[in-house]
Image (cartoon, rainbow, N blue to C red; front, side, top):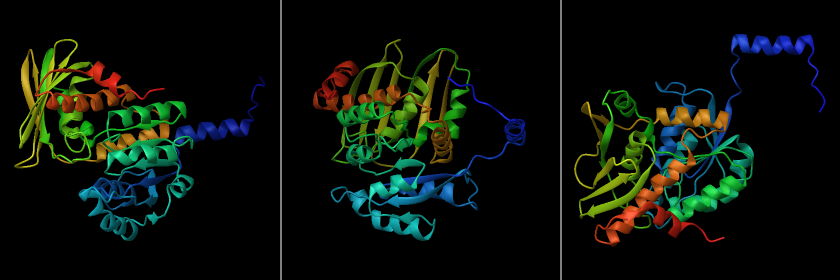
Length: 330
């Protein structure tokens, strides 16, 4: 292989750039799905320099509205959110996903209906551009596994996470000196959308917060279900237990309690998207997901197994069996 030749001038420019810290060019982001408030929140962070949490370095340049007529939270909001994106944040609205791909350096699939993500991913993967898919990664575990396998086959950098993973409160909780962790309980709203496994639509936030503290390694799940709440208990391979307590009535609040040999600590969190978006931007530049895809798959399998446990009147369900049952046939 031929050794590259560098002139004095080229070396000088490289050294000068490193010394002065020249900013990288602004990334052009394309969005698919304007039926979620996340589209507005993310546009505020990227496109509004006056916002106190503005994140420089990228700009949402275009978007495809999408929308699902059989999901109330999609059909009732897509028109209004689309108009806000156009008029308030200067986003060009396009009529096809292909237009989004061509105009962008990186893609965000934000459609609130997880069932649409696989079909949308098929139109994006293979373009060579990094893709962030908002929660839930897919409409069920089988779709999640198909999406991740397709990303692997097309060599597409893929990242998916809930914003709860990167809140300041959870970060603070992780620094507490608890000794050896024994387990944790994560609380949060768990409203059900009938086209998705019960926890996929909203309970995913409390679930991801739990996994952020516990890490991967869950082997079984059992669930107690009532009209107003769900209590989902996971057993980890090292004997720790993690609980998601999801509720459908009362104040919408997120809180995590962690139990250790040297203390018990808890932390309440609110909505904070800046942590997630900071990690998304880093991912777009490095093309390396900050969360291993295997962990994201385990989170989705945890929630799918919770649905199976509900059908079995609370019986414990192995995650290995859940994954095997939902792996697409070759």
